[in-house]
Image 1 (tube, helix red, strand yellow):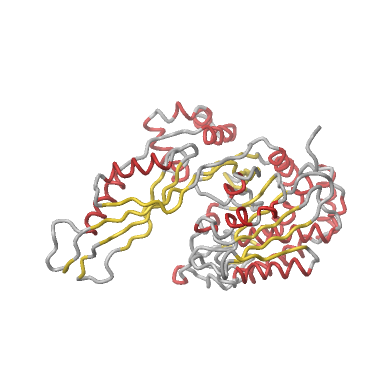
Image 2 (cartoon, rainbow, N blue to C red):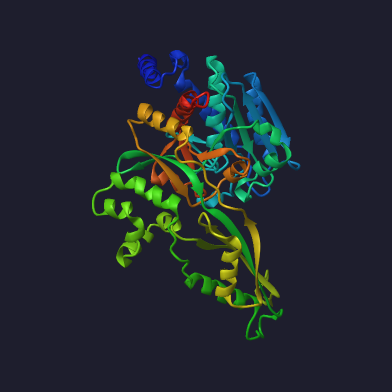
Length: 466
């Protein structure tokens, strides 16, 4: 009975999207189960970065593609730093689309987890493990969508290129950056790219489809404080450690200025019709609303909203002496700074030095690159709107700006219009597990994610309009 009802639903969807109904022969439930098994296996390959070790994960996916007769290659940027490439030929004359994900993950401390973070354990309809959402779950649904297209014998209107890369979590130099600079021919003059960045949100019980078109840019820096080393029993007036603490306290007290960039203003304006007054009016005219002290205080109380209207500075890594009774000659802190589109990293660092006001504390740049964005009204966004109309009850589609960053900038610099969209419906609780404990994705999301991605690839125009 389930298969009959699902087939009927897919026939209706195919009619709405003007897609031939041959895809209804695919067993989406079975594909979801296959995706769940593949994700469990992929999570069990520990690719914590550093050191990464993504080659084993890339080879696992490559075996899956080769078993389906899909062209694939694994390339190492360095020993153990594997990047996967696969390509499914399409029909029609449109330029290729790239499906991008990454295979490395951030560390996971088992003491903070209820379930072993690298066990790939299935429990209560979910797959648990580091990378389930960021971003091995994405790697799996992209792979399974391409496999589903191959099995259906109905290729999309353009070639689909799959890239599952190394090193995204530390900037992508050994992954997407390496591919762009050393294997540029693999991009095949691609027109579009889909990767992580945003998803389908649940807000007040209503689905809202967010597709990231721009993102803040990293300006990771390291503060290095210098001082005289010595014995802890006879401290001088200032040490490297106390200088570092003083610098961090000044940074803690510093408030970066409010800046409402056009992409962010448009993002919140798109939400205005979904809200009630007076919030509707405030979001429609956010620039004016932020001039009101009470509204500004309420608005910035939400960490995500605050991060979208100002540059942020977050101290993360601290290093000093390795012994309690030794005063170190050097102490350091790493800061995760994120800049709004249009900000000048050099000017930001100059301001940081001014705030610190201590020549004995050096400011070194660890990672920085220019901000980039893509057209919020492109045919790809139109295809997402058609998907939302057919499969998500007409959910609104909002081009978004994200406070994090992805590898999209490498491809935008090559002229590829890049967008962040994972076709998962996620609750706020599930979102919080990204880089947190007990990261998980539902098997239903895997099944629906594969199906929606197949639909999207068939919906995207196969040639530019004349």
